[in-house]
Length: 532
Image (cartoon, rainbow, N blue to C red; front, side, top):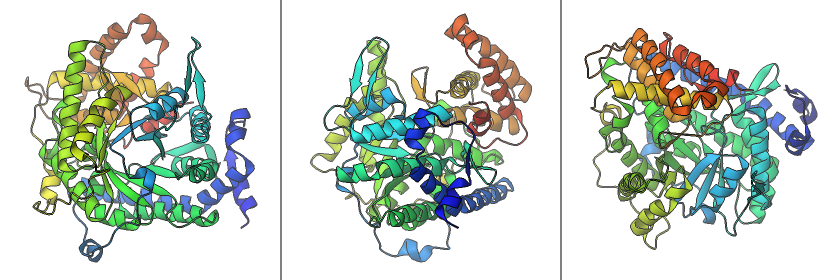
């Protein structure tokens, strides 16, 4: 089949205006069409494998280490290597691909900016297209932005290194179809960012760097390796030109880190502790296991046993293979109140000191106002070193499956349940309104934290858990609290903001996905149907 025939099989569900024509050029669409034809069928098989795996967990099995690749785990090998401009990643900032945020993030006191098409972006068609334009302009150094007051935002000299996070394998791009089916959002994001920026990135001594989310198995990592190798061959690039950092943010993946590194060894530079999604995945994967129900979200912190074991195992596995072990997100937002701000900075500092002491090579923040505090922590820990690859944790006792699966102690409280409701509803309302990165109660919330909030309640209902006040959590109790908390949200935000928003739709979606008999896998899937 010729390239032209393949590309014409892509059907666009929206008329292509001026912005689209900048990005969806004939050559770019040809490349996207090739990738979809070659890799979309395998992606469908990988998603089917996730369903089959989850059915086993629902029936009573527990995740565990796999033995089929023991020879790889037990032999000595290293990843291909890490480019010069990714050697120092001590502080990374993340945020959506919106123009002003891209500029502010690249200008922050950080080493890397992860521009996000995934959890912090509500992927409306316009935002996805604009995001590609914004990143292209950032790579070319031409990006600027003027706000309504006339303030101009421009890149400073020597901005942070740009890394693009594509959408997870489960997310479709509904505005583009192939043979009547929505194409994978991941391929759409990868193909267009790579196609438009690879030459300019390489010319300035950088490269096409990616973050890969939501991976559940080494087979999914191998799929990405094949996608990357195909793109390199297609454009006559050396093997390993494309580099990726993969998030270990699902419970099944933590048991396959060696296998994932090996499957992506030509392209991978590190793994990341995606802590919020990991907690969400723990709940979702073990949803039928009554003895694994987590307490209030606020109680589930990184010093808890199962999360500490996850962090230490990731560091040990990565450093043995010459790969970076990146720490998790500090979601706090600085406060204008001096006392509250000091509390925020102290919390963040303690969290990052724990990561640095464990041996992480760097970490994530969600707000530029945290950069100086976190940079100081890692500067002190690393000194003259650019990373901590030398910390091998060889004297650690082996991390067991039991440790990785051990639920953490803590109360289930009425206040915690009500807070979960308010956070999830406000996030869903923002997301279906087109905003995927939302400050709520002093935290920068993205999809992962909203997922924890609603799946916790679903699981408490499912297993008839009791709150500390003796109330049994039922669907009716949840509905009563939801109605009451909607009034609280209305009071907090004011009548005008509440009435202009989509809070009724958000509450309806929250009610449905929290009380249905089967747990909805990702709230962004039904949410995407409400997004224009």
